[in-house]
View 1 (cartoon, rainbow, N blue to C red):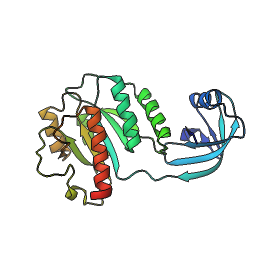
View 2: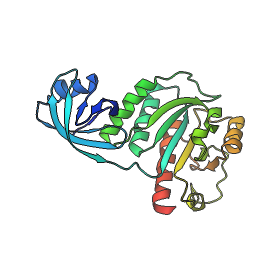
View 3: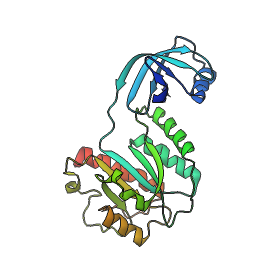
Length: 243
């Protein structure tokens, strides 16, 4: 069954109103008719089933018959990634990170970033599409900030890792088991540099201010978007199976 997106702000009681874009997709592209069954997620963990009530191409509505609350993936992972110059690679990264179940995505202004602006609304659209495709019920929040801003209280309880080439290969593990034995840690942050990586100063900020642990990603040099996805998968796998 195709999954649709319902903005939680557009749900009132047992009726949910789809956005104009989603309504057009339901009515004009997929040609749903009144009374047909639909499934939708609200990006906050809510999974809804119901019937199409008003089949208008600009404002279709769902008569909600049931709601299930989905638990978010564990551990909660936020990826902090330097801005990529290439828009297609940036959007591809966001798409795949959503599919891997990340909690949030923070785009970073760094010294070596070759892009200073990014369309958050476009990335959010990509994220919504990936959420529906992968049948997730949680939509990662996408924001833009400077590396120095990460030390704010919003991330005070997060265990950070930073991927950089000077990490010494001191064991066969990418994430040491001992790093993940503290069960009260539920939020993890992974710092990935842009093309060209982090500067020495930025690495020091991450390690000294955020207490970020170095992360080993192997001997092969990975592109930024690849490193983000690989590190997320490694952390989730280590936590679930080896941590």
